Image (cartoon, rainbow, N blue to C red; front, side, top):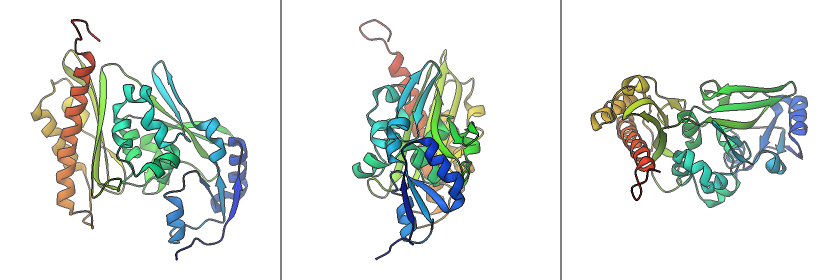
Length: 299
């Protein structure tokens, strides 16, 4: 049986208490909520910490989805199940429901959190790709107050984030822009598994032309990556199969996968190409569905 090294356990009742403990304990401590990624790593001795700080009691403070003019704010302790079931979130960003339907299983979705997914910084993590696609911003709190960083700056490498030893992620913010929609697709070996490759897209249209587009991939290299060049390729042009195919080529060229038990590097580049085209197509179709007339009346 694999068991973690001995550690001390502390349950906290406020963000300030958690930050205070992190300030005192430094890099010997780690926050835990769902723990579905952290605890297996500790059992394998790939991660060793002297202290675990249980923040599950902070759900009332940090477990929320708030829709405001121009943005949606999601607390870091919001569970996967809550993200899956939120109608307001699905209406604004369908990509969230797409992704949550293929994340792990009900046990994980009932306990795992948005903040835990992002702070694990696994290159194959679904919600990291979603947040990258939606150009999210992360609110990080420490003893000196809050700071806000973009997703580009938040993920610094595999399993490494901008959150310092005496800080914690408390909220993720998503800008709402008119005329847009989004989608997510994932290829996995079995239901609920880590992605072989996954892709998310967000597209915005005005007068039938693309005004902006973003694509985020997972499991194609050392980082969950937003793909540069796609927005420049699509802007100002009407959506078309040729355009989706060109965006897929850009994504495949930007991918840096490795051959492993999930597939060859060539196969993963093929998936990056195909999934990028699919999620762009679905995003555009959803924009059309949202604006289609019903009984002669626009909706």
